[in-house]
Image 1 (cartoon, helix red, strand yellow):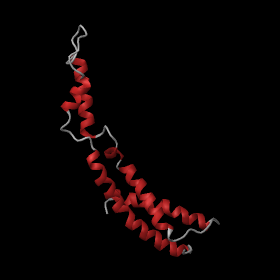
Image 2 (cartoon, rainbow, N blue to C red):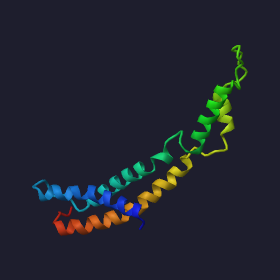
Image 3 (cartoon, rainbow, N blue to C red):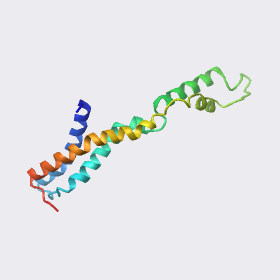
Image 4 (cartoon, rainbow, N blue to C red):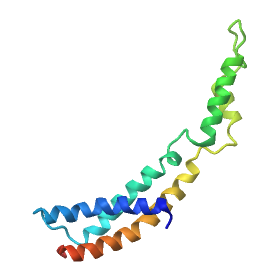
Length: 139
């Protein structure tokens, strides 16, 4: 597993084990069956954080292109003459000029699935193994 995957897993496992530490400090003992829910929640949150650049609108190459074309259009007066007569809209010019660029959201699903798929199985296995060692109760 790559270094990024290892840190991802470590973060997920730390969150899950917080429930085990609570039980060792006198809190209610968690159910070993909670591992699935805890790991799913933790790994989904990690995937959302790590893939936020792909999953938010306005990102990617299209966002950069649109900003550049819009700025150029406004600075050069492409749509409006110096006397204030406008023949087009710079926002529309920028949108049309940058349609061939991806906005990044096409990578959102593959990114989140990849991060989750790296995190979840190992997290659940580690949680179940440590749960048994820590004396958690079974449903």
